[in-house]
Image (tube, rainbow, N blue to C red; front, side):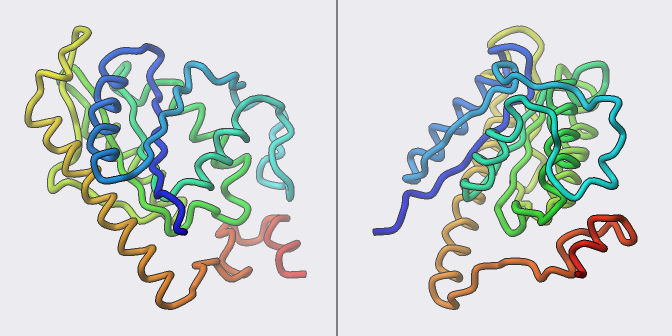
Length: 222
């Protein structure tokens, strides 16, 4: 029996507010398609900032900081698709999401790119300004991790200021619905492709890390 497909959403907001409302809306769309939809609220994760050790570019093993980040990374690896959702704070990505993509990326994901060929979607929430910039940053992060990024025609940006405003942005929510639907379509297509071809989509060793010349690459070559 084939396991139920799953989308994991990473919520980078410090509050149970508009971004959470948007993700609850997205969950309803996914569940109507027969998908499991789980939200990880970074505000509830014990997460340290990158520290002064400074050896990230030379380490050949995962980050030594003991917190909740590796558990979230494991959830991402187990999922079929990942939604990155964050509000705009100070004209940029909310600090929780910024901290997470730094810690997860350099600390865990860069060694063998385990998110490769997973389906990614991005949602940004803003009063009015810089929603596109945050959307772009999170999209580039997904591309860095070699994910398959789908969209909704327009970026899934939702405008909101006060609590509850996101659910009044009909156009933004429609783009979120399209995004989730297209993620589900792509996940189903990839599952069928893997079933027919038997390919597991693993990267070859020489392509696991693009930081040429670093200690990690030298170890991979041995």
